Length: 326
Ligand SMILES: O=C(O)CCC(=O)C(=O)O
Ligand SMILES: [Fe+2]
Image (cartoon, rainbow, N blue to C red; front, side, top):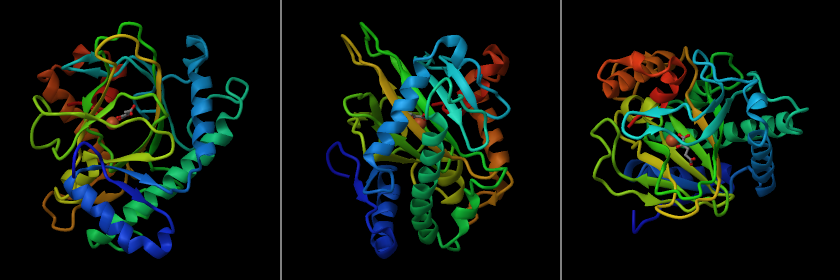
């Protein structure tokens, strides 16, 4: 990687170019862990429409938003400043997790929510399939291996879409909007919007090696269109790639001083199917299911950072805290 940029990879003509695309993706996953993809199947209009319904959802009254409350057992629903980090406290953000078949805001509250979100989810899944196909090839898995592991038509698939809103801050002082963390899932797609900066990444560092303190973060400018993609630690680094690919720390901070405008972002998290048994090609780590890995990881990460006192934080925040602890 040169300078302070993440590689941008074009998915144009995927079927006829997948070998070349695969080489670029694997290179980025091995060396950096963060990259962006362009020329994908989501148009600017589709992305803008999804940001539009997201903005309309977050503009609802607190009572209306709380009609789909966050549920710890499913990790779905709406949370408001509920994600806790031992180092930086509660993130200054609100977010809504959905997946196909989960309870969504009704169209009477947010017109067009269901139509736009269903389409967005389907296309995120399509983009994921393309990227994971390439990683699967590099790891010598059968062609359909990751497609099956991430099959959103299966009832045990826990992939999720997360709409995020970081409210504007008058005198921001570099406040923690989203504390430093790596993602648990196999692969995350992050959508940003022109001018709503704040995402920072520390490339080339693996979550399971050591903590993020003292290292350099650099900003990933917010741009509507390109999708920021990062490798997550639940499946890729530790298990599925035998440590070959990198899961990077990242965070969102408000500006060091002055006014920080609101930021909206959207994440698509590939957690996999709960009953899918997975293991890296070199069997470096024991085989496990996506479901077990997810739940154990949440517990370990959380307990590690809380000194074993898991009950000091409201139970509602427990899963959220585990999803993203650094
Ligand atoms: O808002 C962002 O860009 C960061 C989102 C993120 O890292 C997450 O939800 O895990
Ligand atoms: Fe993240």
